[in-house]
Image (tube, rainbow, N blue to C red; front, side, top):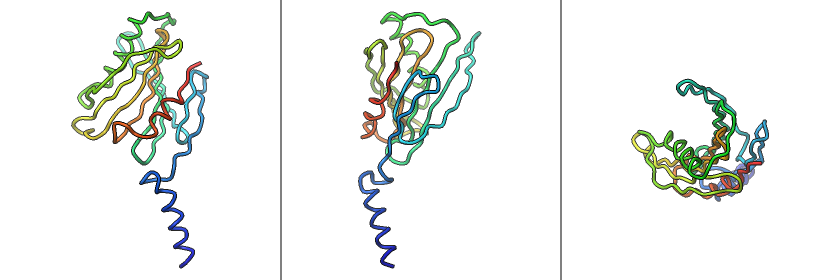
Length: 177
């Protein structure tokens, strides 16, 4: 009986900080091709699919880690286009990033805010989408990156709050070579 009470107290202490699950253990992760590094709260599941877009195909690689708690999932999505990379001007980069965001802003998501900027050699777009209809109460929070016309990187979290504590840790850990 006493041993059971001690175990229960230890489990209660572990969950006290988050209110629902033990503290997340962040694990550094590098994409197999070395195109980015990021820390996930666990090992990501990797899926690859092809998106048909008119006369060409876009490769969609998703690295996803589901959790319990305020953030339901952490994701890095890499869209790779079939043409040779070309350096983008600031205006072109902003257009590409806004188009990548528009693909998320649909009947299920409504744009709350977005900010365009630069991060090293890359252009970035920070944004917040709020769920509507069936996704009411959820938030899609992220930062997209682009350097050239070949790839767009989306670093996003699906959350039940618009300012989860671990978001900065996740977004801040993302790095491009």
